[in-house]
Image 1 (tube, each protein chain N blue to C red):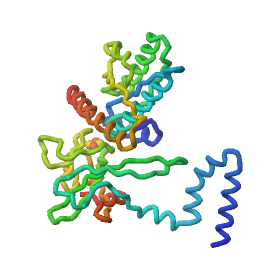
Image 2: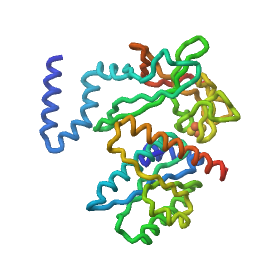
Image 3: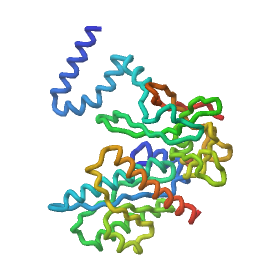
Image 4: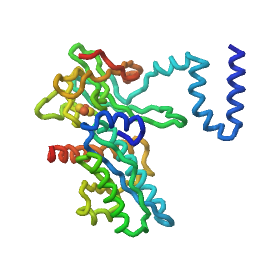
Length: 154
Length: 168
Ligand code: FES
């Protein structure tokens, strides 16, 4: 389910079936890194929306957690932990963070949810159908990971 | 008829020239179109979209067929990819099923649940459907998978808009 009013209505009526929160994470940079930052955002957005299509009935796709690349990383981590606290309170059993920013790997342990890091792909040079194919194959991998996590905790 | 045309054109030129008229026109045009010209609506409903699948290649084993088309959302057009599970039944009739689970809308897969082979399986809450799309009792879905109407054109499969079936 997406973060739109109709889907939230469905969510509120079927809460017991929707136990998974997905949070896209990407940073915003300026200057020379601006384009790279936009590419990462595009990649994560496409990926999470495809994922949402596969698993509409079981997950809620949150709006992205964004931050400035040059911001203090303690503060950014704190903010995300705050999101997490609230999401857990909201009865989500499984939380997945999706990012292509490698720096998050260092903070993995400080988060309760699962951090999934995927290197951003250069989608720019691809045709529409290549994009779909690439993203779908990534989603297939995630599908396996998600089903595993779901089975772990029952 | 000609009177209507003029008023529609006038209406459009007014909105288009106004401030923000571009956006307003985008939102209003579909409504106006349906109001003025119900024929257009009927046409849109009967559209068949080409898929990359050759009819001669369809076998008894369900396969994923992805197809793309343009969709108008509020005021901008976007390209959507839809998927169908396509196969031929025992009588050689083509069956194209929507992969959208009738429980809460996850995408169902063919033959991925080892304990229940040759069924459609929904990984979200373990919903199941038999090959013809009928929901298996005592799994969460309460209705069979929607069916796409289809056409054959120049050897390729064309799909319409998926329609719900009666409850099993
Ligand atoms: S969405 Fe398919 S079983 Fe719940």
